[in-house]
Length: 269
Image 1: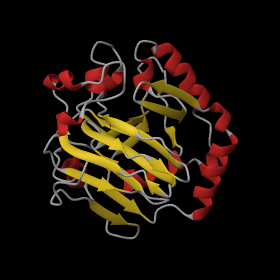
Image 2: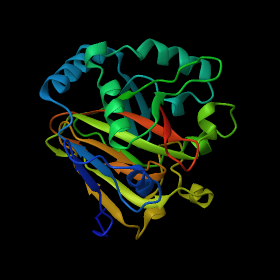
Image 3: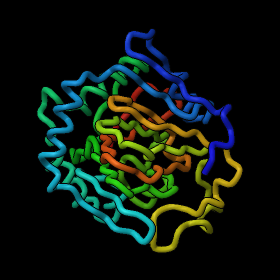
C-alpha cells in the first residue's frame, strides 16, 4: 500500500530536547500525529545486552501460525489468552525477569517515558488481587515474514471480562527497535480506527483485515532504526511490511490510561 497522504506527520523527539507534555500523547490518541519517535535514548551497551539476552533465550520463542501470517514472540501477550487469563498471568510472571535488572530495557524506557511526558506514574498493570500483567513482549520477524493489517483494542477485546484493562479509555503502543532488517519491515499506520462495521472485512481464520477497510485512508510509513523508540495509537489499523535479510527484532508494550488527564498510565503486553 502506498503512502497516500504525506500530511499526517510524526513528532520526532531527540534526547536532550525540552520534555514534551501530555498534549503530545493526546495528539496521537486523537490522530493529530501519526507517531511519536524518540531518538538517541538507548546506548550501544543496553541494545547489545538486550539482543544477546534475546538470542540466548530464542528457544523460548513461540511460533503461532495463521493462514495469512506467522507470529514469533518471546513473552506473553494478553490478546492470545483472553479466554485463559490464569495461564496468561502465570506465563507473565515466568517471563517478567527475562532481562537482567541492571539492563532491563523495558524498565529503562518506562522511566524515560514518564519523564518525557511528565506522567505522575507509569506502572506495570496489576489486578486488584495482585496478579501482575506481562511488562513487555519480544517480537521476531525473520526473513520473509510480514505482519498483516490489524488493530489492537483491548477495551473491545476484553469487554466481556472483568479484567482491569477492559476499563481503559485510551490505549497506546510503545515499540523499541533492537535489531533492524536490511530491507522491508516498514510500519504502515493508517488514520483509521476500528468500528463494528469493519468486521465484514475480517480475514476468516486468519489475522487482521482486508485492505478494503483502509481504502483511501492516510497512511504513515516508517522504517525503524536500531535504538528508535516509537509510540502509535494501535487502535488504528497498522501492519509490518515483509522483512528481507537480517531479522527484525523489537521489544514492545502497550500503555493505557483510564481518563482524559493522561497522567497515570499502566503498561502490559
